[in-house]
Image (tube, rainbow, N blue to C red; front, side, top):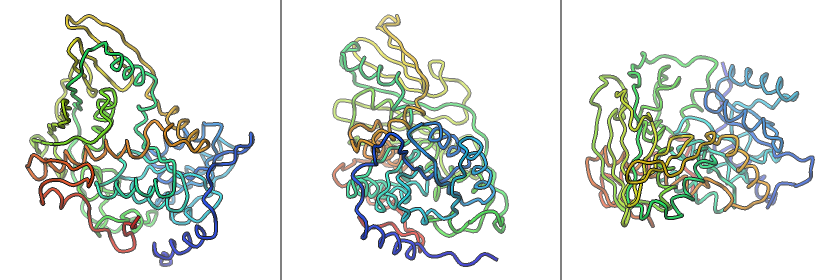
Length: 428
């Protein structure tokens, strides 16, 4: 039987004592042989891919791996050693990293319900953070994550890697040049056939998994293998549906190229579970409108439909008075009113460049140099939360950007959640 784990409060006392005794560095040492020490938290799926991007960067050393699965830790540790010649320290509990002065930055690639809390606690402990999308499980947590980054002057990058892709910057500059004329509307989408979500019976968690830590701030629930192995994405308590999973990318690059760097004023949504008769809680069909002064973005999600839009299963279209532009994850193409191609470009999806951009900011301490700094990432993430909340409440909502609240009590009730004991949301 495993010994009882220390509580979050116990760990934070230790981390707090360290933070009080030490000065948070204004920059990482810039010697030519010094590397930025990164601890990777969550290295099973997406985290494994991002971890290897960090390993490949010559300015970085992955010194620690952290995961709630013992077998995953052992496997990834061996892979890192085989690739780098050095064995990283293997850690089951992320709280051991907070007070460790050898760790400069955290990579966070856990399920969504952990993203914000790890970002917040990492910032408060003086660590820079690269956090996978979406930036939070809910609006309140994301707001606190931004506040924590500001309070401790931390570099925090959200992992919408396409923000660092060369093609996307070309596309934005083309729109800014006025070649499309006045740009008013954008449309982002996801289509494609997903599988049904059928939950297995609840059971005892396997010995390999620290299920207490996996649950973290989410409500107490009996272990379910299907949820923990991946269906968490489709459950209210852990994920954000496909809007927060894939939609955040498409909405983000749509608004970025349109030059919309703020929250929308109003959100409305319609949709539901129209195709799958399964255990998924989020909709399989969703249409969301985001209203800005003089602009509108529409988002369309069809998880059951094989037909693509404009030949792309996911992407965005931007409409101006003198032409329009199609965006995919690696390309842009602008058309005149007659359908003739005006200009186009392509590149990779930007993951290597996004990690590089983060590490450069860690060294320079130039927050403005980040291609998807936490506040910008928070805006795109809130747009996903707001679309989900509009659908769940069945209401058209006005959004107050100053308070990050809605004009309806039912919607405001979904802005945050009650955190499980031992994993409370810090006050910043």
